[in-house]
Structure formats: structure tokens, C-alpha cells
Image (cartoon, rainbow, N blue to C red; front, side):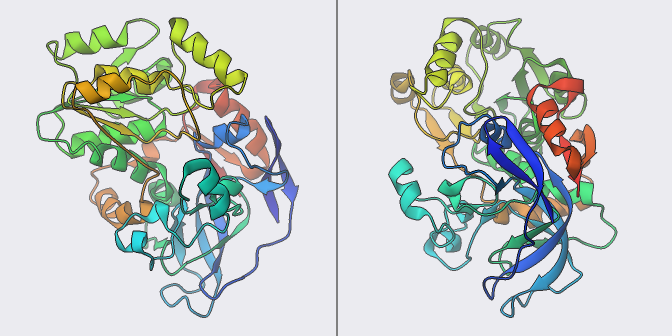
Length: 389
């Protein structure tokens, strides 16, 4: 089959690789009909996530048609259309029973490696380094899906791929970001990053009762999407001082909750941004926590900061004194996608949210290297690419 493979920093290629096979009685094989490039895939492309190996198949947002199932998979059959969540979860361990699916304790065969990096292991993730299991991803013609009796959700008749594809990651992740904020009706929420996850975090905050959402970015097409599709107020951080602007817009108090939907490769202005770029380039820190620092300093006293932008290791100059002295709450995590898939599917069916509205580019799998470059470099107003194997 054809698959997009990592060959090194800024080097991904479509290669011919062996077809996946059933390895466990709870596996399924899915023929991919739609897959997408996620912002967190760029961290792999840029070399900021360790333990990638030459030939690793990329991609963790995918869906398709079941073509084979293991004998213990009773809930799926050949021919079913399914969306596959990016965290791999067994469904039986302590964490799965607590609906903390992204930290499943049985799905990462490289748990010892992850423990050295993070203290404890996460669950497995498709196409996202050997720290999270070394699983082949879904930017390919076919994928093996472990624990297929737990993860995938069937697509109802009459629904298109583009209506449901983002249930695999970015829609639940955006919703999770807002859910972590414990939003009360009438509150003000600020969102750093107007990429796909940021757009869904904005829309989810409104669904949960926020009165105002203020979105922060620098790219005109993303700010325009935040205003026109997600209905947020917007700030361009290259044009205004974000902390001052947020105080002004909230009567001096600050937002009730702040969401970091950017993560380890945040951009910014001034000396702090330059400091982080130099330290990250020299591998003296793994993150550029510019957006996170701003969120922590901007949220109101007693407020909540939700972090769903991906971070991988260690960062510098964190305002822990602000967190402690101002009674702040930080909540974070890889989204527990399986928890949200069905409720969000029902919201899509009810017309409360239209995930397809954020798609800006549709391309063939063979064009994936070009698509990665375009997405990374923000060319042609690219916000979200869907690939068709």
C-alpha cells in the first residue's frame, strides 16, 4: 500500500509499504477513505517530538471502511464505515473505566520509554512516535486498529466523511478544551490559536454557555474564520499587547478561562519570544511556551487555564508564582476522545456544529508532502487539509 512516511526533519514521503495485518483478536483493518493533517503532526515534521524513526507512518486523524476484523471484535463487521479515535484504549483498565482513555495503561508497548520522559506512561497514539507506542498511522491506504471493539464509532447512513472525520481528534479535542474550563453561563473565555482545534474550542465554549469568546492569532485567514464561522471577537497579537487588550475588554478583570490551543511551537513578539526560539533551537528547552505564559498571566484571579496544545518535554520561565498566588487552576491532557465521540456525533446530526466548515484544502495522498509544507508555512490560506487515499 501507499503511506506517508517520516524520513527525517522536514522530510516526509509517500512510500510503498507492506499492508497491515491482523495481529490480535481485537484488531480490525480499515481501508482509509479520508485522513487529515493535524497541527500536532507538524511537531513531528519539525523534529520536536523525539523517538521518530525513518519509515514511521504518519497520521492520527482518519476514518474508513472495515475490511477485516479479529474474531473477538463483535461490534463491527466488514463493510462498516467507522471513525477511529487517535488515542488507543483497551477499555478494561483502571483509566479506561474512569473514561481517561488517552492514558490507558495497556495500549503503549513502549511504556518504559515514556516513563523515563514523563514519569508515567500515556496510552498509545496512532502515528505519533515510539514514545506513544510506535503505531503505524492513518495517512495511508489501510491501517490496523488495535482494540477495535472499544475505539471506532460507526458512521450513520447518509453522513459524509467530512461531516464526521474530525470526531477522530480535533473536534473532541476542542470540546475537551472548553469542557476543562467548567464554563458557567455568561462567562468570558479567551482562546490562544485559531487553527482547527482553536476554532472548535471557540464553538464549544459557546455551546457550553460562554457569553463572549476572544480569539488570539496573527494570520488574517484564521482570525477571519474565528469571526465569521466561530463567532468570536479577535485579537492580532502582532498588533496589540494581548494582556492589556484582554484587561480592557473585560473591565480590568481578565477572562474567566483561557485555552492554550497552540502548544510547543508558539510564536510571539519581543524578547521572551526570541529567548524561547534560541533556547529551543539549541535544544536547551523543548517548548516555546509563549502562549501558555500569556494565558496564565491574563486569566482572572481564581480562573482556569486549559491546555490542549501539545507539549512534549520541558520549558523555561514559567510564572508559577502567578499560578500559586492568584489561585489559578491548570487543567490539561490529550483528549479522551472516546468519551466525546457519540455526544458530538449527535450535535452534528442536530445541526449544532458543522465540522466540515473549517476545511480549506482537499488533496490526494500522493500530494501529502506538498500539503504538509503548505500547512506548515501557512500558504494559500491553508487552515485544514483533508487527504483522500
